[in-house]
Image (cartoon, rainbow, N blue to C red):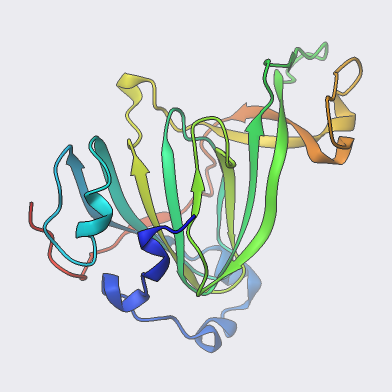
Length: 227
């Protein structure tokens, strides 16, 4: 399915592609301590943005939505997290990004641990584990399909344009929850798999927001937004 954001380039949103060579001198440990930069572009509630190249894209929505960019240094990670009742369009603008994603199994399959201090886990099925390298198509996740729970890992310096419809809002039940994934074999006894192999499934356990999730705000310098 064609998506308008498929044609977006770094220049369309005021970015200049990072040079991977500039990133190599930092070393792996140093790179992992560099922050992910978050650029807020726009958030609106049921109206069309009068600004190209966003105009045609926003015209296709009539509900709250938010557009932002994440700029990753090499090896940085946004850990596994969900998007409750949300549709999200993600477009890699430059560089390479590994995306690992899951969807929950229906009906819900939950395992309570008999070990003290061990978390409850819920069964999910793997949707993808692949590297997106710009230029590439936009990926889309939906409330119950398409990899609603995902993890981003930067293979090289990269930037990702995200459109969230609707965005997170905790008071309306759209809270961002982080997870740890475990192989199916760790809690698989008695669980029924309707199709696929055990390797296609994992148990996910809720966890606190990771302490090492290091983000800093940046300034969006792309086309001005007028509403």
